[in-house]
Image (cartoon, rainbow, N blue to C red; front, side):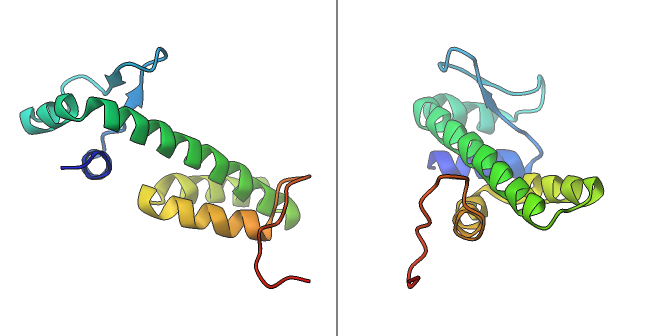
Length: 119
């Protein structure tokens, strides 16, 4: 089993693992892991740490890009909160693609637009 699959399984079970501040451990709520999940985490711990960190980075970047879209459309606080919730509900395997779309349509100030076919 690959780290991405382990993380997807944990998330599907409502378990959100985090990396310890020193970057060497994985934390989950007490009592929520099955023996098989615990064994998979131990076996693939280094790869899983990298996967969790990457997912957290993408989620953070996606949230910032989504808020730029809300700024562009002058969304209400209620609409911004709905966008935030939808981002958090987006499956991790779809977040990277969504991030690229938001970055293309709502680039950060000073960022290069990587869109193809412009000009």
